[in-house]
Image (tube, rainbow, N blue to C red; front, side):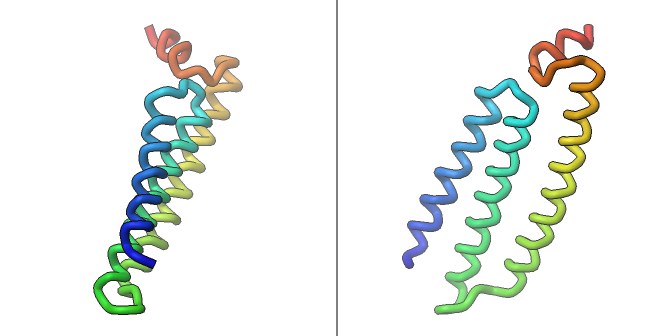
Length: 103
């Protein structure tokens, strides 16, 4: 498959993630948008690494993608813990309402 298909899919996923971060107010949806953006970056990274050699991807790109996925999983797990803590203590997941509690 040509590189443009992978790049187009990656750009679409990235903008879906940006849309979630800009427009949504629920903390879980924000985390989902962040995860979609990280997956778009990983897809783009692997797609460009496959263009170095014909028919094969560079193994270093796979290593970086696996590390990115594992670190992203840890970040999302920490975000979910913070989300659960906020819901238990404040009873809401709306980011605007939680910001008002700060003042």
